[in-house]
Image 1 (cartoon, one colour):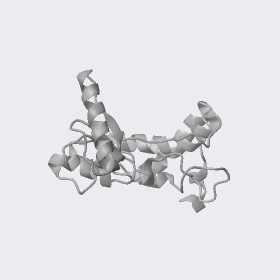
Image 2 (cartoon, one colour):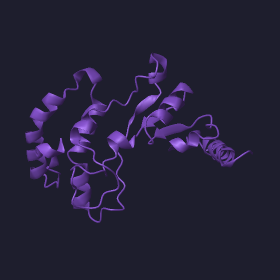
Image 3 (cartoon, helix red, strand yellow):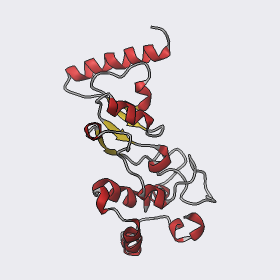
Amino acid sequence: MKDEHGLQSYFIQRVEKYLNSKGRQIIGWDEILEGGLAPNATVMSWRGEKGGIEAAKQKHNVIMTPGSHVYLDHSQMKKEDSVVIGGFLPLQTVYGYEPVPKELSADEEKYVLGAQGNVWTEYMSNPAKIEYMIFPRMTALSEVLWSSKELRNWADFEKRLPLQFKRYEWLKVNYSKAYLDPANK
């Protein structure tokens, strides 16, 4: 092996063979592309979309998880008053995410299984904070992932938000109201 990427590839492929023999599949963050991808691996592209594009072009399943659009532990306000792991991620950015990159051909698009919202909780000490960080962005991401691209409409989503906020209140969900402040758009 020439370097640590070769060692990583060897290790990942060996683990994959074992898991495949037990009827299981391997899934890993996009670092598993470094040194050569295991034959049946699914890639979670978190460092942008590049890893997902590369994996789909190699005919591997992909779950898009780029920090720029689906890391719900990033701030919902430009001037966050608590510690968060990343930068500013407004609701409209989440809603505007398209998980199938335009760089992929029609044949390659089928390898994009969807996307995933991520929430790392090392800076969240209680469930109320987690709810605050994910809502309403999780609602926006759900619509993106469960609706066809042609049916998504930000203006319509915005019109429906007041009713969604009432639902959160009825359910006693602690949600962020940052979206209501024009400074956070």
